[in-house]
Length: 73
Image (cartoon, rainbow, N blue to C red):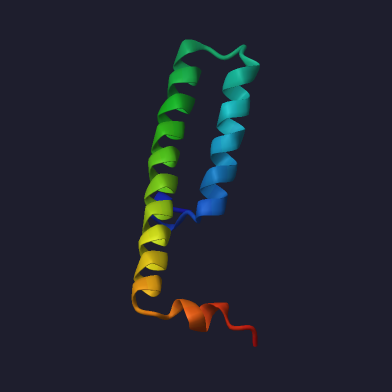
C-alpha cells in the first residue's frame, strides 16, 4: 500500500510498532536511523490526516450541519 493511501489507523499502528522496536534496542545504527526516518514520515502523515479531519469538523460546525450529525436516527 502506498503511503498516500495509508489510513490514519494503519499509519498510527505502524508508528507504534516502530517506536516499540526502537525502545527494545539491539538495532544497528543504520536500522535505527531507517526506523526513525520512517517514523518521522508516518508522524507527519498522521498529523496531516488529523488536521484534515479537524478542518472538516470545523467546516461542518460552521455550516450548521452539526445538528444534523448529532441527531439520532
